[in-house]
Length: 92
Image (cartoon, rainbow, N blue to C red; front, side, top):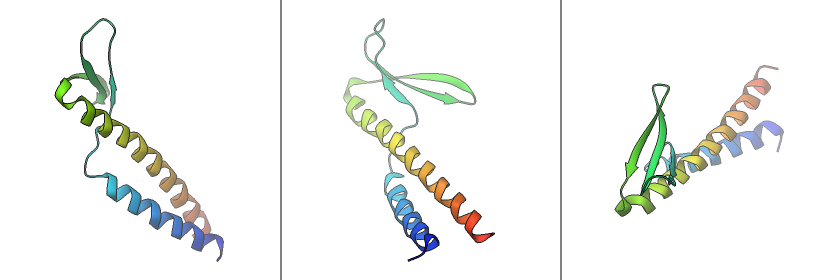
């Protein structure tokens, strides 16, 4: 198997992994401020930082969804790198 075939195989696997994670994720991070009670989700909206209160009832699910986004982002970066390498190989 040559380099291009290996990259395509890895690309397909990453696409499958990404597609399984698209159903539920939250962009942002969950944190607890020492000066406030409760937790919040902090994210960027139109270049501005927005903080949203996270109720205790949904904290666990919101944390899981935020962590899922972090994993999803890493997978997308890996896919981008593979796509770049394939682009270079195809135009040599």
